[in-house]
Length: 307
Image 1 (cartoon, helix red, strand yellow):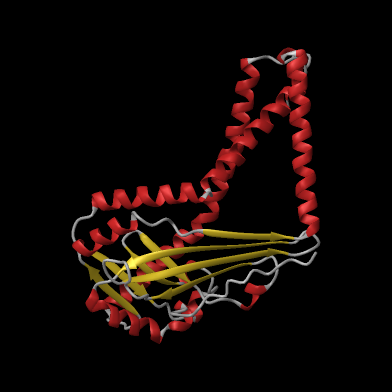
Image 2: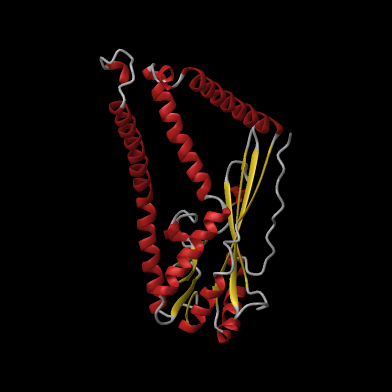
């Protein structure tokens, strides 16, 4: 695009910087619009799920269980959760071909950085930015490299733990009255269509923490597909101020082909229970253990890609 202007391929300073900024903003705005459009069906399905839960609650359906957790119990739970992290662990493995490709990519970036540094040290910045095309290439590279670093930081355990503690602290400050614990088993019907959609999922929700459960399809073990499983259990209250319902989410993904890579992520979340609710919740989950994976040990073995 810049080649169509009459700048004679010379870097124009602030005007070119503003041009690069506007191009990046347009790109990110396009991505945001696409994400919003893609999320509209999920929002509609979520409204249908809420309407279904409200209707079944009014009719007294045993597949929905609503309990109140007292404010004192919720405060003690949130104060205790401040001492725990997000419990996020990520395991990755890759084939020899994938590791070689990653090594060559890192080596190429390192050589580019060394070459740029040598040019700046011995020739200054002016020769580097004399060519407008090179200036734009360096600018866009720095923007997307900074974005990659930012996203990497957001996925780190330190950032996730900080975000969890901040949300819990805000929740603790806004906490007033008992908090509602909702368990909903969504019986599959022909009207729901795709069981993987939001409208076909079961739910366990406490305050601002919803967890969705969907039947594991047969294609979950197919290479290239994401497989998400949520296991629930009520552990012994050792070192805790009360009973809790523990939810362990396991996500697996393996890419097929020559450049194989496998990723497995696990996260643990807890929900407080009143002592007189433990037996009731245990019996409710036990009757529906197929969907809620109640007290089933998750299979956490990594699938090593073939070399």
